[in-house]
Length: 228
Image (cartoon, rainbow, N blue to C red):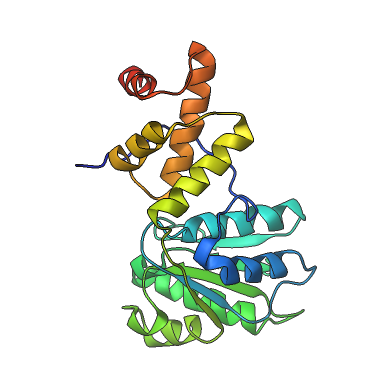
């Protein structure tokens, strides 16, 4: 059965606590450790895994946690084409989807790496990066690829179906929502199964159910889709 991607235009604030760690507990604990400290890690961290493993969620969660502490953070991803110069006020540099970087972005990422780890003043900055492949397999310039694999490297695993169901159940319970087994099966079979998409779907269902004063059922999901 063909799965549908759902772009409903709603954004939820990612956090490390809201991330269902499952088999990725070591990576999540590592990120929590360093975001909780006044001075982030001087050793780079690289997360890799296939789409849906939660890489971007984790990077955005770290960004949000550090911003909440009043810290300045640099961010680069495959869509960023401007403002690629390094800022000395940054305490952390985040690099998402490194496997998609073009030559200009690779040059910027390398410069950020050098400036972060060997600053002109102050302590080294934390570099946290993520990509779809392990460092050795990245089709990037050699100097950038070697630096991405120098520090802590974590392979993220995609959650299996029972773990996805557990995430949906946990999130629904926290909202005071009831999801029947049939509804969860429908959500997992008809929509993209990565967690960010499922959380967006649940967020939208929560709002639509509240607006219509109806319980979340398969007919409600169909009605919601027809109205968007």
